[in-house]
Length: 305
Image: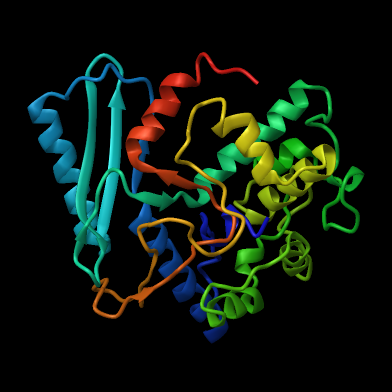
């Protein structure tokens, strides 16, 4: 899986004074903006199908607008479901700033690091089926990985100490210079992490590392003999009836998608020089509209796998 991780929840040491460290910070800051541009907010729970109180709706719309303006986000889709009180879907801004296309609740968007939840759900299903254990060390499945004694649970909980490959400066430079279109193998991503020292011994702390979920995806594929995308589709998307949600196998979009944006970071969050991307990552999940996400939330109590 080049995976959900390419444009997902990146973390950065902020005390690096070097020019290389500064470049890394600015590149990753731009990728943060890209994530916010495609999917800003989900508060997901069961909905009764009604509208929210007008005063609450006005407050939520104001919160979205203020954050959109503060962070220079071109367009926001925000879905709020509150049990017993109703729901609200907010469409604010543009899905395509070059064409001036308003963002729409039916638009397809890449969901970035939300894909991690799908990956870990598959892991937990495999645990429930007795095929793996949360206490299994990663070295039982993948050899040569740094901190190989880290358990599957520690990978899922971000407690493995394994280096985050998206903080490797060489990876970031090549990722950006390829116009975000290079397809990386799982092993290449793990190798990028392994050429850096671990943050701490397994279980010795907490650090957000995209490498953890890449390794979990590799374990899923080794245990099942199928790709992670196939397992997510068969175990989660199909049972929940998420027909418009897919796990793309290539960087190219198969349908109309809100384009991700590369934003040159600056204090004013100036969006006058964006770069339209054709990809956030080769294997992050693509969802069709907030209404479908709400439908999946309603179905999950009765769907079993």
